[in-house]
Image (cartoon, rainbow, N blue to C red; front, side):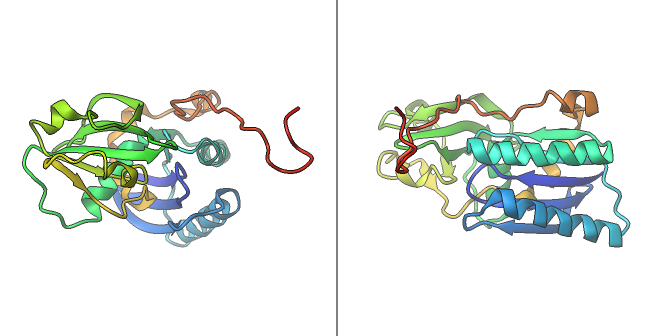
Length: 236
């Protein structure tokens, strides 16, 4: 399949085209992006490249969350628009699984046997969006949750198995999770160029055009608007 992959769950903004799970073209700003202005430009460039190479898109894959409310909304809106315009299905992909794929494919680590992967997306203070995944097949163990990290977090698993923590929520956990079985990988961000294989695996969950109309990202927590600190816009 020829799939356009979109990832906007954090401050990073990326998109790619994959063919049978292999990335053939990508665009990204992984240093902090303005998704609303950059993502359409990235996609336009990739669609032009697809046209030049006669790559006919079969589907759009979207990193569905959890993550930034605004980022997920932007990604979903643009993905749905492309699906409508080209009459192709949407493939929602677990964002935390995307992070796992990034950690495995972008590093040359010698992974510990029986390892558990624990991607973390920052949810402010000591809270993270996280779940545990088996290293060998990236199957999730338990539910995705918004978890407040303390000294006892993951204690049962860490007592028995090595765990790898990564993502923009992992850094703040280093001083708390001190087990000898806790390993931290720096610099792992969700990147669409590593989504292709996952998207192929999620094709059984493809949404047709009628279903796309009702699709919503996986926010995990409800968005709560904070009081404005801009003069003249304070909450009364």
